[in-house]
Length: 168
Ligand code: FES
Image (tube, rainbow, N blue to C red; front, side, top):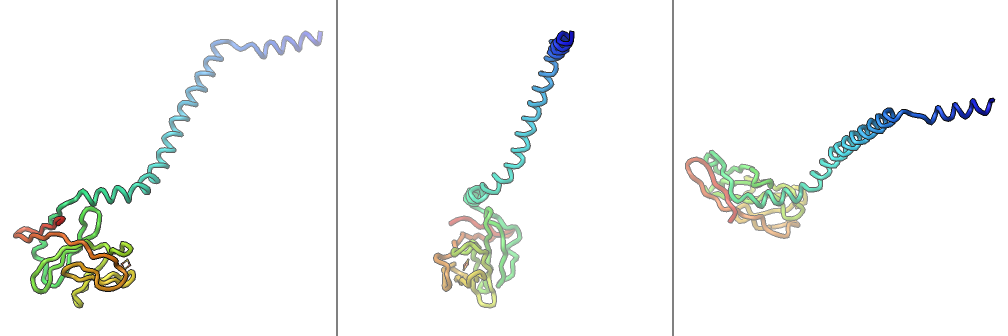
C-alpha cells in the first residue's frame, strides 16, 4: 500500500503536460537568445574603446598623410616676428612670419622623440623643451641637441585672404 502511493507520486511528478514543457523551453531559449545578444552588445561596447586606443596611431598617421594642403584664413595679418601654431592633418605645425618679412612653415614635431617644438622669436630659433633640441627657424635644420633630423618644411603661399601651406 505504501509502495503504491510512492509510485503514484513519482509518476505524477514526471507527468508534465506537453504544452507546458514547450512553453518553458521557448521561454528559456528566448531568454538565452536575449542574453546572448545583450552579451555581444556589452562585449562590443567594452572592446570599441580599446580598439580606438590601439588603432589611433595608425589612423592618425594615415589621416596626417592624407592632408596635403591647409589654408589659414587671415594668417597674412600675422605680425612679423611671430608664430602661428596650427594642425597639419593631425600633427602640430607652425607658420613663422620672420622679422625680415619671410614666411616659413614647418612641422612642429621634434624628430628626436616627438615632442612639440616652440618658436623662440627673441633667439630666432626653434626649441624643443623636452631634451634641449634646437632647430634653425628658416630651414628647420637640426642645429644642436639630440634631434637626428631636420624639421620638415612646407611650401607657403601668402595671399590677400590667408596663407596656404602645402607639402613640398
Ligand atoms: S624630443 Fe625633442 S629633443 Fe628630445
